[in-house]
Amino acid sequence: MKSDYQKVDTNAKIKSVFIYNFTKYIEWPSEDQVGEFKIGILGKDIPLYTELEKMSKVKKVANRTFSIISFEGIAEIDQPHILYIPADNTELLKEAINKLKGKSTLIVTEKPGMAKQGSAINFVIVGNTQKFELNKANVSKHNLKVASLLENLAVIVN
View 1 (tube, rainbow, N blue to C red):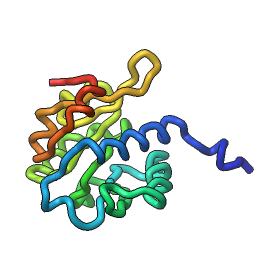
View 2 (cartoon, rainbow, N blue to C red):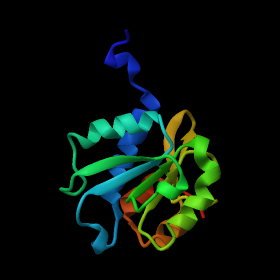
View 3 (cartoon, rainbow, N blue to C red):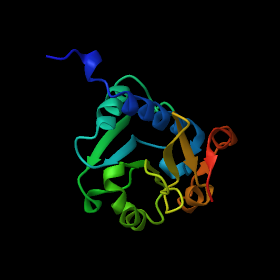
View 4 (cartoon, rainbow, N blue to C red):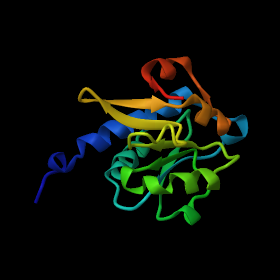
């Protein structure tokens, strides 16, 4: 039997920290700043889910509890504050965008080119380092605002 240490998916751990930190530098409209903060993941058995779930037990998002929801398909998506679409499900990006049109959801992906195709933030590897692309136009379409500090850390995509 493996120890917990051996089961850790380093990539998922890094991305979960990024996603948690995005909550500090993205501003949601005031009506979305009450109640529980929801992070949705499109797909099942995603290592990132486990890492975010662990984090949700000990951290808060702006003094609010947060929960992680796994969506098996587009029809299940309600209105999470953040929707993470893993590389295996990027073909569902356009449908997810249509489903969330007019809603304040930060869409995060992890496959090259996705920030140009509609996601707000896209994880990329640059020189063996985990980075992220930021498409400000896609952020604005969902009535969200980005802090300049986050912009400064991002690879900007138009």
